[in-house]
Image (tube, rainbow, N blue to C red):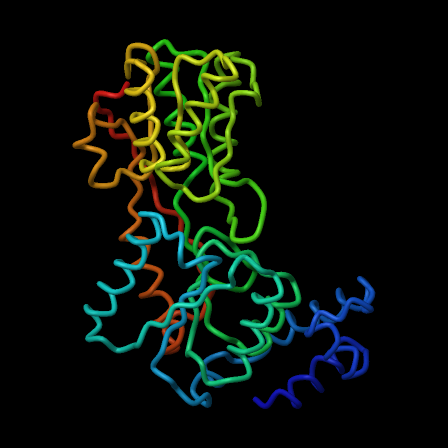
Length: 341
């Protein structure tokens, strides 16, 4: 389906002009919310009426898959394991696709430019979006073109999504610390809001809050530190900051990941704090180093590599017309108990 034909259909369905449709799809700030709503609803209706397999068959294939995230330069172990999952699944499929990586550089405008580029050029046959939340008009544009997308740690109506139950992970970690007799539980967590931030951090925070509430432990935001880079140094700095501020803690749930938790262990050693006697510690991810740290780290295991493999498989099946109905897949985390608690 050509873009001019698509604009005509959307305009007719919405009862507006093609110019107004073009403005909505290109995020013109002068467009009213009512106009935007009409166009987005029309796109959704047309998407349901159109046969996606027909459009996919007519599109010239590039045999390329785009992986897009906010930053490539600050990859955590989580992203590394995801990328490994993509590559392993691609190998299993006989290297059917070239994998290209893209970054929005943490900039909303660049994210919009990427969407326009991937729809107007033969850049890729499909996209895996890692932790990015797209605006409604960008989602409408992708839907209007039936462009295959799989969202990781984020959701969008009409598209596949795959997540790990971070609420459950946050709840399990906090519940475990409480079962060890800890009631002053500090929290180190990734950013709750901002570019490149998916639903993960908020879900872990909500799981933490729920476990506290069930045991009548007051929520205290002075015990919470947000980090951005998921880096070792942030763990060092977070514990140092809690000590400097004299925050009353007997344990820490490091929801920002095991690498940050390793930084907490390093700073505890420097400050003469015994883990787990003085401060019990739970990490997140269960990276390889978690089992050999001193002390070995209790953590929440995530099947991240499996997540990457499943996301890649799901996208390929969508590109090839096998898996057209949007699926929401939620994988389960599990608690791994070691010496740090």
